Image 1 (tube, rainbow, N blue to C red):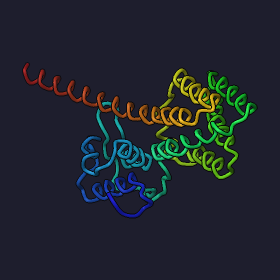
Image 2: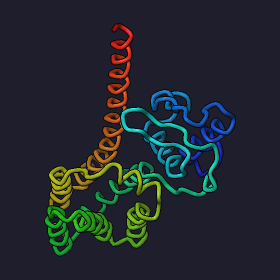
Image 3: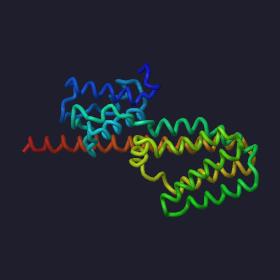
Image 4: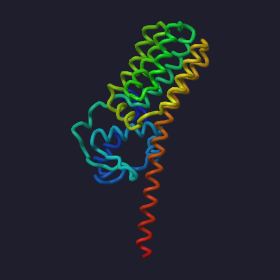
Length: 247
C-alpha cells in the first residue's frame, strides 16, 4: 500500500473497496471479507481496516450488522469523494509518540503551581459527568504541554485534542469505543502525575506512553470482541441449519 494521499492508508483501502463494489466484486447485499482477510489483502493493521470500514459506513456504502459482518448497501454515493479527515488511531499513535516526550520535558520544567493544577484535574476526572471528565482529561494533557514552556509543543498537543472533534471519522471511532473506564483513567493519569511530581523524565515518558498504548489496545479489544461475536453468530446459524436438515 504505497503511494500518495498523505500516507493515510485507510483512505486507500476505502478507494479500493469502492472500486471493487463498483466493479461488481462485492455486489449490493453481499458481505465484505472478514477483517482478518482484509488485513492480509492490504498488508495493514486492524485499526486501519477498522477505520476504513467506519468511513465506508459513514458514506452510506456499507452497514455493519452486529453478529453478521459488514454488508454492501450501495455502489455509489454523492459523498464518496468527501474528505473524512484523520482517523482516531492515527491521532492516538501520534499522541503516543509526541506526548511521551512532552511529559519527559515537562518533568524537568514543571513548577508546584502547575502540579497542583494537574492534581485538581485528576480529581475532576472522577466525576460522573462524562463530558466534564473528558474536558478535565483534555486540560490535563494540555497542562503538561504548558509546563514545557514551549508554545509550539502547546499548540501541537492542543491540535491533537481538537482533531478528535473536527474529524468525523475520529469522532465515530471514539463514539463506538465508548468509555475507557473511569478507574483505569484515574490510575493511569495518577501514575503520570506521580512521575511529574518526582521530576522523573524517564518514568513520565513511560507512564504517558503506557496510557496511550492502553487507549489503542482498548479500541483493538473492541474489534476483537466484535469479530468473536460474529463467529459465534455464524456458528450458531450453521448449527441451526444442520439441525433442520437432520430432522
